[in-house]
Image 1 (cartoon, rainbow, N blue to C red):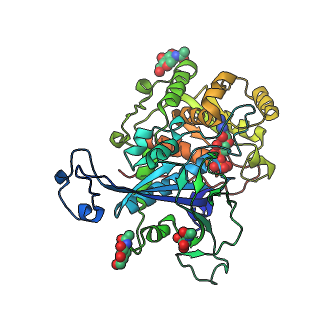
Image 2 (cartoon, rainbow, N blue to C red):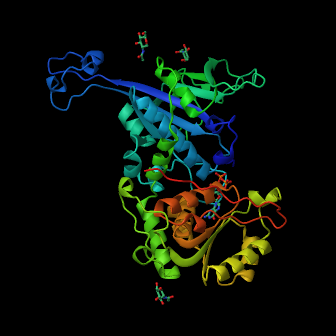
Length: 433
Ligand SMILES: Nc1nc2c(ncn2[C@@H]2O[C@H](COP(=O)(O)OP(=O)(O)OP(=O)(O)O)[C@@H](O)[C@H]2O)c(=O)[nH]1
Ligand SMILES: *[C@@H]1O[C@H](CO)[C@@H](O)[C@H](O)[C@H]1NC(C)=O
Ligand SMILES: *[C@@H]1O[C@H](CO)[C@@H](O)[C@H](O)[C@H]1NC(C)=O
Ligand SMILES: *[C@@H]1O[C@H](CO)[C@@H](O)[C@H](O)[C@H]1NC(C)=O
């Protein structure tokens, strides 16, 4: 629900993380004569060719994580970016793999009657693209590879019981006694059972509490035992963001919709996409985009608090009309989470608006998460985009447009509240190559 880009220096990604779960797993591979290869010796530079073909001793460590339950899909994408960067740091020292936490039980996924737990990342993102950045694997693959549903060490993240030392900002991490009783309980065999992304067979071997304050990289020394401070470059985060390519089936549905209802194709609109993100390097301003205005109108919980940076529907429609005139666009695509009542109002005021409306069968297949990505994809290809203030859903569209090579002027725009005095526009997210 919060926005990472706007979080003050003192707070950090750790606030969004609930758990870190670790498994280290020593694959001991026997040689033909039956000896167990000594990993240390092997790692210390014994030639790999002395091992029979295909038998490689690997001392793999898996990192799993979970995010605080109320956080939405798009904020979780930010958490992934930090965790992937953490794994890159860890990999300088040891062989770590990031296990992708299955999607499910998200507060915003409210479509009734569809089962939305244990959803693998492959439904939303291209796994090969993520892999090209850092080794990742789906949870089910991890279970198969590690030989069972066991998690060696569950670390429940918490603050320090004594709170902040006044006026002093310090990054630190320590094993401490748990402030709140962890929501895991021991079963008859002495394993910890509880919510592991809806996989009931998963068991924790040990649960401890870790007090931490600082950036995610502060945890690295703890995980590595012996190393001290590590730097987690912002550059890494941006590279990781580029690797978060949407699943191909969702992009295809979005592209077909653009062609059919918005007269928009990549060739015509200069938004050519490379399946290999490492080769995607569009010049800012090179993308033209389809001849439509795209709008992200975040409603629901954004209006319940009557925030003064969110417009009334009437105010939004007025802005949409004026933008269409100014940008000489006669079509508007609207992505919104508005409820039925607001949607009816909106349709009355903007009868020609175009929306992506999945059938029930589509929704069952794509889930709320897939439909939201299709909305984002279509918004990302418009000639001009305007989003909602501090919505991470809008932020992800900004980034996608930056990757596609749009002029920042057509991207970093947001609606203002009806009576908002200083309507500060979104900040420019720049890519580094
Ligand atoms: N299909 C669709 N879903 C939307 C739209 N806006 C919001 N949603 C849904 O509502 C959720 C909330 O937005 P997110 O941005 O993901 O949630 P968040 O991380 O809490 O971020 P905020 O928007 O900052 O609240 C999304 O994940 C979608 O499931 C939209 O325009 N189209
Ligand atoms: C559980 O993990 C903590 C932290 O690493 C450790 O101190 C403790 O000894 C472990 N307990 C058991 C039973 O292994
Ligand atoms: C950490 O250092 C100690 C002592 O130098 C060493 O025995 C231990 O193996 C090291 N641990 C790791 C994970 O490198
Ligand atoms: C589609 O766009 C092309 C130019 O990009 C234009 O010539 C054509 O008239 C458009 N078709 C419709 C139906 O708007």
